[in-house]
Length: 318
Length: 238
Image 1 (cartoon, one colour):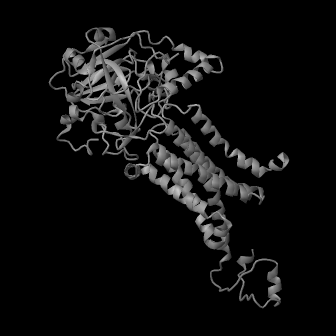
Image 2 (image 1 turned 45 degrees about the vertical axis):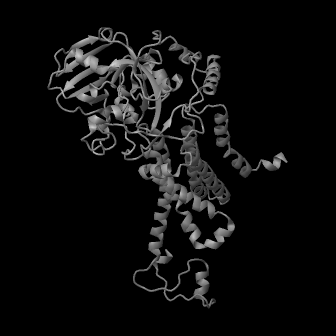
Image 3 (image 1 turned 135 degrees about the horizontal axis):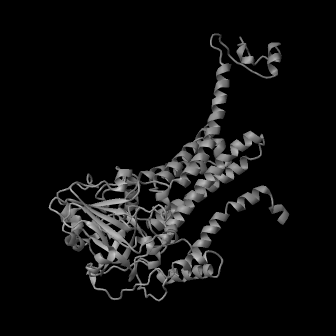
């Protein structure tokens, strides 16, 4: 079962987890009783064996954030390689082979090559980062990621002075990713990018876990990017390649709809999407009578990151 | 008693309420997922769209089957469209936005897809207000003109649906195809009628009144004093 019922969730403004869980339990229990799909649900019951407890905190927000119920974060993903539906990826992604996993380092860098994931991880100290996660679709949650700063990996492979941008690529595996097989909607594999200073920023992390466990496959296992001040689509999943470039890469969404999704994709309530406002967001797990939350500039991380964009017109570089 | 209730109209009336019961059931049993307000909002929107589409089905069915007893169903479905659309709007204003009017104004101004929703709702609202018989009488000829705006509402609805999506377009495409068929039917009828009307307008000779039924012969025979026909184009009679 994917829900863990022993976790104590503090009361919060954003959710009524107790009731939520009870209902979930009931539904799952019904499922398990064989009404439907019990086989599917049990198939990933053992997916997360690794447990981290009481990891050091990688980042301390001024006012503590209360994580969204894990069941929501694990069942509400935009993983278009698998499905355009946010819940279906949870089951579909379980076929993804993630062990062994290697990451190619390429481009303007001193130590290019193909690295085993374990080798990369063994050099890193894992920490917990509790970040707000804001989707461009105007919903948000709070996720306790487990990972390490991207900067500490980049420093190890020694980018050249000519490296101005970093490009990330998701796995291309049409056998397990149905929408890659059918070339649906976007150009696959998914590509994202950051400016060098953004990539080196201490808030930018590579995550290998969340909620004290290994990253679930639907959330981007075994290795994903998390850039908390940018819209969620920048935080690319299942990374197989990190490439250092002289020029800005063309990210997948920018290529597909350049007027809708820019390269920067910084969370900004004053710069609406061409078709919808970004001024507020729906907080996942909130109760019926909790209205939308006002979206903050840079998703609330302005103090840390605004300096990187001080000379830029954020309407133009959206 | 039960037999009396089981009239097609009453059955239709009750069936149209089932989606609401379904939604309330899922609200009570917390079955609306991680974002219940959004889910509620979307489901009410979906049902107002479906009701509108069903309303648009009535006239083609009448025309094809030549059965004229369906006007009351068109009215019923039209009012259900208004009912679900109103709940959709109430959920947006109250549950989603918490009646924060400043935030609502910003949201609407910045979201072009909502403009089309607002347009569609205002039209459906106007049509609902002018439903009572007294209003039909009051508006006279204009009633039909006003109610033709349902076509504009339906187009606004499909844009409202399509423009808010980032990814999967399968569902709006499904409804779009049905709408194209429904509006295409009207267009075909209109086009056919126009061609017919054109044929009936003589290009060279003047006429005052043309009457194209069996009474024409009588009129020609001079039995009627109220209808005067100066000349009748030969084309008009074909």
